[in-house]
Every structure is written in structure tokens, then in C-alpha cells.
Length: 229
Image 1 (cartoon, helix red, strand yellow):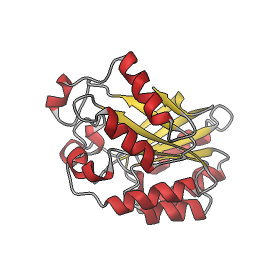
Image 2 (image 1 turned 90 degrees about the horizontal axis):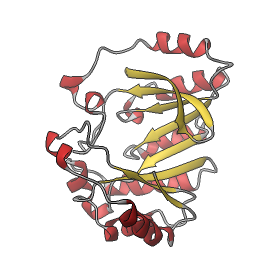
Image 3 (image 1 turned 180 degrees about the vertical axis):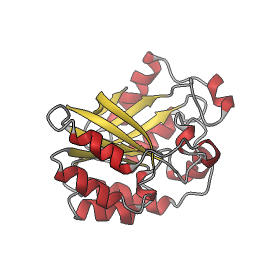
Image 4 (image 1 turned 180 degrees about the horizontal axis):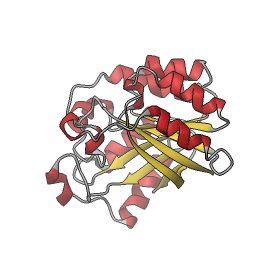
């Protein structure tokens, strides 16, 4: 895989587990609020980290780490994603996959082959607004397929949306919640403005705690659990 970063330990990224995070390079989307632009824009890509170095590091952490999160970028763009996931699982780690859901057939194969123990999918916007929020044309049917694949997979999962106040309204969030209706977990993520793909978004803000609570309650009517983080 083309790996652009490695976080050696995290207590937050894999629910209930201490994990390492492997960041892949490349993403077909151009979300202006993205906080990993160096993994999205080819002219900002860092020097790749050899896959063997990552695996060598994981080998030394078998007794210290419980899981490995594969994030990005968009990991499903990597042609050897399945091989990497199988290797990591073979080392005894639980594997979490972060995805935008734009490649449902890759996601289906991952599920069918039992390569993921947890999947986190970003649902960017109501389907009618996907191109506007993501900055490029997006196949909304592909996103719908990925949602269905994840809900029906039997694998532990979550859906999540990064919320920029000037970009998504309460009604937008409710529409997203309806599109994942009955989902086990839906997280509303506070937008961080410290690093963004579009520099203009560094002046943007997210909702207040009180506003988020109102939005959370509205969205919670359509999913099993909704939280703000």
C-alpha cells in the first residue's frame, strides 16, 4: 500500500481498543474541511513509508496494541488493501477500516472475506448535496450501497458526519440520519479548523454545545444511538 503516515498509538480511534493508525495516501474527494490535506492532494503527498517498515513496527507491538486502524485518504483506493488487512489480522490484531463508502465493491469484498472487525464510514451530506460538500461529482448510489453493505454485514460499525455550521444545517443532519435509518451508531463530529484542505475553511466554525444537543436529539429519532464528539 501507499502509506503516508503512521500513528503508533491511539486510545481514541478504535472504540474500546488501543490501536495504531495507518494512513494511506490518495482520496477521490475534495472536502474543503478535510484535516488531512497532505493525504489528499498529490502535490502535498509526503514521502511514502515502506509497507515493510509498518509491518515490522507492528510485529514489535503484538503484546502492546490490540488493533490497527486503516485510515486515509481513502483506503479502498489501495489495490493491495485486502492483502494488507489479511496480513495484519494474521498478526493477531483486530482491524478497523475508515472509509467514505465511495467504493462499495471493495467494501463488499472486505466484508465477505472477513477482513474487518470494525468499519467507520463518513456520510458527508444528504445525497442531493454530496457533490456540493465533497467538491467533486460523487455517485450517490455507490454511497447508498456502502451504507447497506455495512448495516447488513454483521460487523461492528459506526457512521459519522463532520459538521461545519455554515455547510450543514439541522435539517441536513436529520436527512443524513434518515438515510442510515436504524444504524447502530451515528456520531456528529465537531469540525476542526486548525488544518483544512481549503484555507478559507480555517475561518469556519461548528455548532455550540447547546446547538449540537438539539441537533443530536433530532437525529437520534432515526438511529439506535447518536452522540457528539
